[in-house]
Image 1 (cartoon, one colour):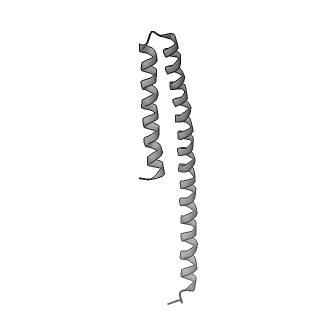
Image 2: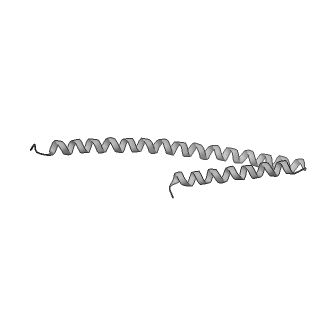
Image 3: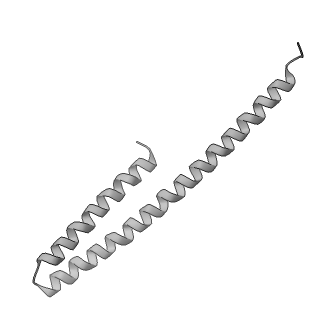
Length: 87
C-alpha cells in the first residue's frame, strides 16, 4: 500500500469517527457529554484537514516528480540518438 493510499484510508476513518462523535453529541442530553463529543468531533475535523493537506502535498509532488522523470528520460533518449552513427 502506498503512502497516498494509507492517507486516503486514514482520512476516511477520521471522517467516519467525526460523524460518530457528532451522533453521540446529538443523542446525549448531558450538556457536559455533548460538549465533550462536540470537541472530539472538532478535533477530528482538524485531523482530517491535516491529513488532506498532506495528501494534496504528496499528490502535487508526485506529479512534479513524474514530470522531472519524463524530462530526464527525454534528455537521455536524445543523447542516445546523438551517439548513434548515421545510417
